Length: 358
Image (cartoon, rainbow, N blue to C red; front, side, top):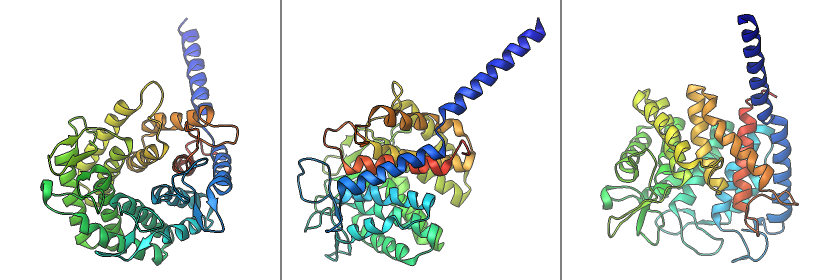
């Protein structure tokens, strides 16, 4: 009887392993998806004669995209370059160049190709992508552009509300996690590239303020603090938690202080509990791509693949249930560049991870 039980138990384990492995998407399938999404971006969103992109398909507010979708696309193209060793970032960089302004107080990128507001977070996302590309290629143009952005970012910091960076340059009404979490990452990546202490000091200054002001008791980050009233906007978005998760991992790698790794693990557990409901994440693919960055940073340190399971499942669910007849993704009737770029980044990162080794 014991022998039969052992055999049956072993059989169940084999079945379980087979189910789990077959549930994982192979690198080849991710690459197929990436090819389809990139082709659709070129077909439906890229205006080759202008070197610019559309915001969405269908009726558009403006002739060209705002900067934000390009912030997502430039990062996605960095990740596809990792896979394909091509020059996929170049058309997006050239498009972003058209948003550049030298207006006071320092050069940076505005939110539209014509004179428009400048957002600190838009510029931070671009700097992160360029610093990632610099780390990979050692092409100094990426470093120089990121450093120039950093100079402008510092103009967004003051001591109102006790510190922190504003969200929008010409309307200094709020200080948001989305303009402070990524600023920590820009500072830390500049520190890793240069070993200049001033960058680490800036990262810690902003990190400490963000945790004191915008971290909820469960490890999830609030959206913003209103400068005039000091009222907290308690809305929670996956990308805000993602940047702070990644920041803690980078601080652990730089300082070797276990408190940052402990905090990263706490945030990772809290984020899955808070955001993964009824077998799905919230519908914003790019927000979830930023969350994935944090989990992948933690995975690189602790090698606990089980933490990634819900993110992988959600990415597969999207392909199976939120794709139209043109293979465009998203629940919107007028599909957006931001959503295509977000899911492109997710699939590219998961293909690079290649948990199935296939």
